[in-house]
Amino acid sequence: MSARVLIVEDNPANLELMDYLLSASGYLTLKASDGKTGLLAAENTIPDLVVCDIQMPVMNGYELAKSLKNNAKLRHIPLVAVTALAMTGDGDKILAAGFDGYLVKPITPETFVQQLEAYLTPGQHEKGGIAYGDDSNR
Ligand code: MN
View (cartoon, rainbow, N blue to C red):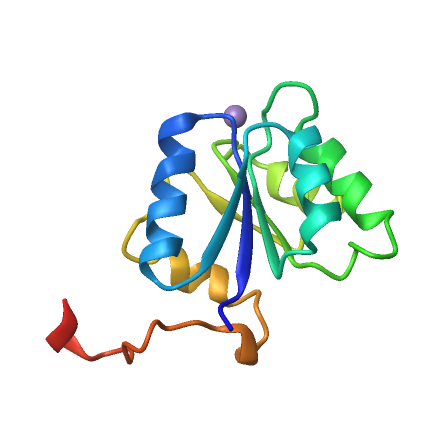
């Protein structure tokens, strides 16, 4: 069964890009455009991974991280920030907020899915039947 990835991002273009890349790699995606909607989606679906923007309306990424990590049913889900904040110290702030890791925007389409897979346990990797290093399907 494909791993389910919840993408929480208020920028439609970024949301669609991440959705496309994950879907094309065989993952099932769930989408939310603010932290509060993302939290509800996480509660309802218990996804295998949450990818989350930091700056969002209604509930930002830090608040979402706090809510997820304070919830006994949700705290085990790997939580990865995708953020344009690249100034010194933001990485530490993101990790201190409860995120398991972060990727810096703009994302690199060629490596995005692979970077996220580092946060999934091996059994959850969905390679869509295409072996890594196999050029025949590209
Ligand atoms: Mn944003």
